[in-house]
Length: 360
Image (cartoon, rainbow, N blue to C red; front, side, top):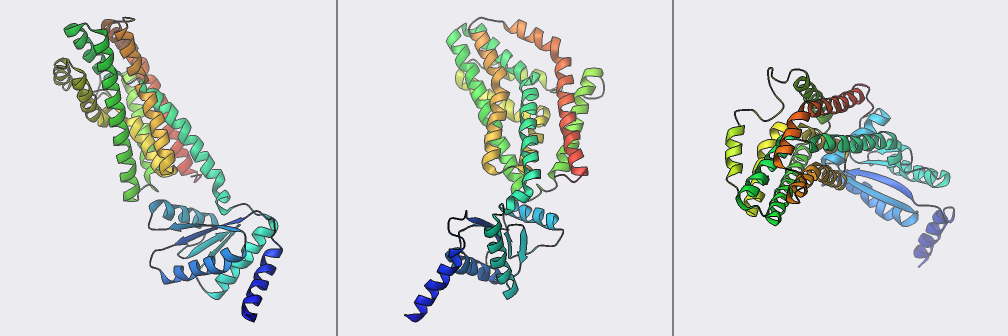
């Protein structure tokens, strides 16, 4: 009975000085099955959590994003880190010795007394900058990818075929929307697949260098197509592929067929013409959470399909013709290459600058 009263009294003394104080935040990096980590976890749950206003966030370092976060703190403190590691306020504590336990509690008291910000705010500057860069890059890349002349040409040919065969406005619109929906679903699924593949492989820490050079090369390739469109290589679908692609599309006269062609064209064109999409996925795999990446990929793909919707409605309601769209595409294609080239070169150069100046 006396022991229980003493425990309650000691807890009351611990909490007395922090009544009404905003909870402090503790970051706990651990490894599953580690006995040292288990000791720290027990200490946090039984001593710290019971006696102080605190929020404890746990990070299992076998997850690549958690290992990367711990590595960023190691860079910040210019030291090696290992598990268990605990961050309180602006203090990093490693190990499970007695002095580590005392340091955790002392640092927590200081954080509560001085109302120190959460440890993650120490990385807020770089994180905020990367998020801003990611969003602006997503919107820019989606805009230039949306004017993809190859995919638009396929859709125009497809709808032209249906119009010749049936001359039915409703079916033209349904086929165009089916093609658009199929493209949206395909690109989104392939994007998520590539995103998770990079995460699982654990190479996202090094991906920025690769995608920086990829973006620069895509930019230079498109600028080359503007200056010397007939020389060396082309960023468009090769001429040798086009007759077969046109033959396949010209045989489609139904809405289900249009949906299937949308999927086929997506798989067919993505590796060749959607360099901006691959660059953006690489950026998101490094700098975004899974939820944020999904949201930005949805935004990217909705922007990407807007020209498809415009072409579908324009042809369906007789506002334009396939001949007019194709004429406009051929007339503006060099300018589209220049715009794409400049945007991608700027994205790649910006990323490379951040890597080289160690701002990431």
